[in-house]
Image (cartoon, rainbow, N blue to C red; front, side, top):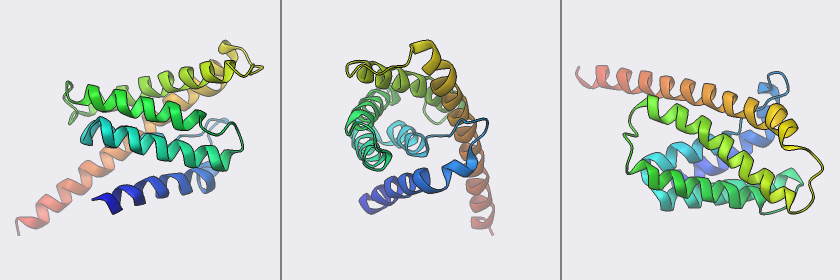
Length: 164
């Protein structure tokens, strides 16, 4: 279980730095480690969500060339909060998972913007929201929905073959 968790974090981070640029739509790119962290936090709780978010964010910080620790902190907080909320929500429903992913992407982006403002980040909130946060949130939601459909189809196929 722990090895699988590490492989998911590393796989998402490697894909983020290598494959994601090819998936760009109108300049918006998904945040694959964030999507992985959200689904793990919903299913496994706040500790796994916090650890996953921290490690994925730290890897993104190390490879991104920005301020080291900003994404690690925001993703860790988002994973922890969503893990706590996962105990109170019906997390098996895609109607909870996909909107939660979109809203959490917006919240994490706003938190990251707030932290960058402490270092006098030169962009305005409206520009960052329109150009980065909102497109990424919508892209993450679409990607998360596609992942949920793929997982559902795989589980249905496995259930059909297990009855034979």
